[in-house]
Image 1 (cartoon, one colour):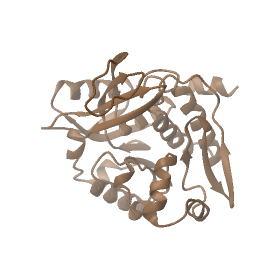
Image 2 (cartoon, helix red, strand yellow; image 1 turned 180 degrees about the vertical axis):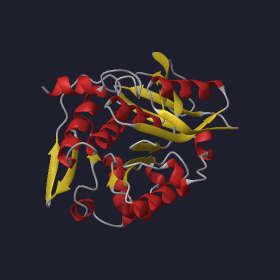
Image 3 (tube, helix red, strand yellow; image 1 turned 90 degrees about the horizontal axis):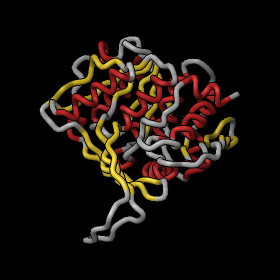
Length: 290
């Protein structure tokens, strides 16, 4: 198997651009429509692979045309798919509305909710880092977190959608990568103030703050890693870019280095439309660091 294993969702993103959001019962005219490959799991796998990681994806697609397209995209990105299942359900889909370079998303799981892992030791053999998100059933997430904890495999959990996040997940995951809204919801679920939660978990919680970069606590001090100022075209997938590159770099360098490279990659990713389209290669990132 691969050093980086991503267990999660894959989908087709249906993206609508608009100047404003419609009111209830209102029909408005959009300005553009596109289809892209997406799903938080697939996005993170692509980001890690383009950075140079040895990546395998574990998930499910439908036996439909969309599923064939998703598998072809994985092949094109040179991501291993031995454990991608083809099931009797529609391939996952997301409807994304973009307004003023920001986005809102409605996600339909479809095949992603039919993932079934029969043999954990086979699927995660040789894995050093496992990436997880919450667009698949939380029961499987907990099983994998428990397995990885027992085997000493590093886990990175993207707690989105945060409504499915639990205290048990927080305890077992090595790293948590929420955005600001998700972090606030997590603190509420855990019944603790945000600053206290950060202070008690140094380097575990890495909060994405969009154009402001990321923050975490280290040695009792809050560290802010600013993002470069760029002209954002589409922020979809920026967080996934961060997580994927963070995972790949974590195998090579220190925590601090991994965060800095991931912030740089995330900023670059928003320059193009589509979650995966703007994700940078290792070569592009290295040139950006010069």
